[in-house]
Length: 77
Image 1 (cartoon, rainbow, N blue to C red):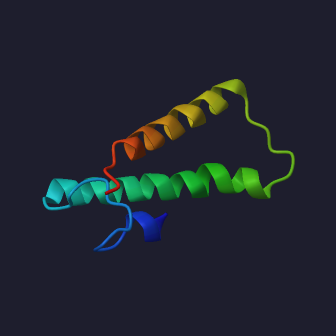
Image 2: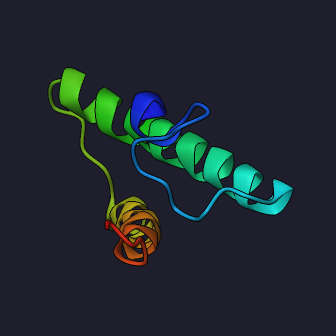
């Protein structure tokens, strides 16, 4: 996630990256995507028998929806 969203020339830019606000938004989403992988996906991918309750599952789905919705707004040209 960090190599895709981070650095001076991100491979996937969420905005033009011209203003301080755009740069900090990019960095924030880089950290959100990276954090999702480290805090949500990795424990469940590496721990056998890990089960979440319905509320946790809904929270994860809502968070994933936020991230994916933001990606849908990106102009990939």
